[in-house]
Length: 265
Ligand code: TA6
Image 1 (cartoon, helix red, strand yellow):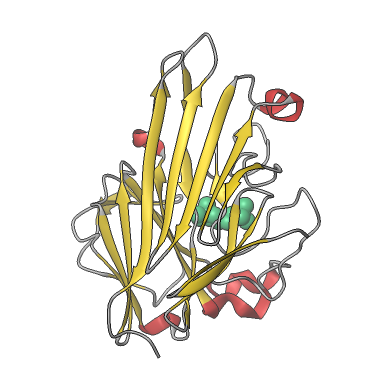
Image 2: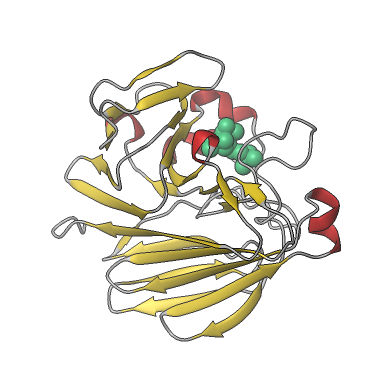
């Protein structure tokens, strides 16, 4: 698999042109993202870990099309690359049109400095409006899942898959399996694990998702016994926050991942 490596004075990140997916990243001497030791790198298959981009839908598709859309399975074009930045693009092609009959152009810029920055751009190149959902599905590395907390979602409406929607009381504790969507989440979330704090800052991404399947993941080939090593805290626009773009319109949003000072090991 061909990889792009970004390096800065603060860390490094590896990116795959398939899906424009950050596979792993380290900041200030600590792993920031989790890449499954059981990840399957077969071309065209979604890779478990890092930051896959879900587009143009999120989660399972009602008609059985690929879960989380096709952007993570497609090979993107590298437009520009320097030591600490890469810009990748994906345009509609015969395969994407067979799944989603629209003309579009996606661009993802990844920049590494003291933070890892994602800038995502969607252009509607169709003659008609398009509607889509998307998420940057980040897998964060943790050493103590059950001692981890996601701060910032207090009071946000929490929609549990197959359950009722209710307000989130306080911080989200990772003591039980979770697969929850938070509507209208604030711009800044924090993943806290003991003294370590990861900041997840989003702009124009209204939804958040927190996911760890617990021991049930032992049946998932590319997770297995490694489920306690990560927690997904995702940002994007899904559900009620889905985006509609008129012909020629552009949507742009960004996410920044960093660790608060003093949290290096
Ligand atoms: O973001 C949470 C989620 O939608 C879960 O429901 C879960 O099954 C997952 O993403 C992983 O999906 P994947 O298709 O990558 O196995």
